[in-house]
Length: 241
Ligand SMILES: *Cc1c(COP(=O)(O)O)cnc(C)c1O
Image (tube, rainbow, N blue to C red):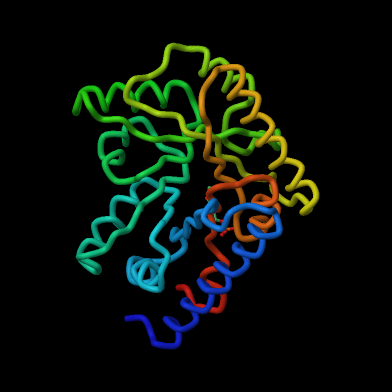
């Protein structure tokens, strides 16, 4: 059970994050509805995840497919009438595609052409009318430990014939570990510029930019993020075992 104190704290954290996002969106001269907050629930169990949805965070992100499966199942029980929109924000192994792809509204983390092809093939085998929305994860910080494709790998992928059952609607990126806020902002600007070039080069629309986490969402919003993935800030002050 979640204490009423924890529930209260969670509601306050959610409100504070909403306010800060709204302020960042306004100072960037953007429209308030142009940024969606994805609450990253990977740090907590099903009950706190359900509580987060109840205080108003309807877009929830999980980074591991197995945890997405079990959370989605648990939340069906805990909140039968929920309208949660799940996002997969971490690496998807090809052998987990079948079980995963019916759950998220968006996969942020397509990090290889092989994965995209496998998602496409699996969808085709399920239902000819199925189309999954995905983002391509780009590595802009250049660290070898980070996942994501280089800009040239992304160009190679986009030069291939379009997958019929996958719609690429944008890019996702993480700032490098330990970057200053100025460096993070520069990396987010690089992602936006890459998106702009790709739209022209390939004559496609890539409206979504998933970038910004607890420590750098203000910078990401200033550079055009449409989806911010916020985890730890939402659970500040809560005792998480
Ligand atoms: C964990 C995680 C987040 C959330 O990070 P916080 O710093 O806790 O807000 C965002 N994106 C991805 C891909 C993650 O794995």
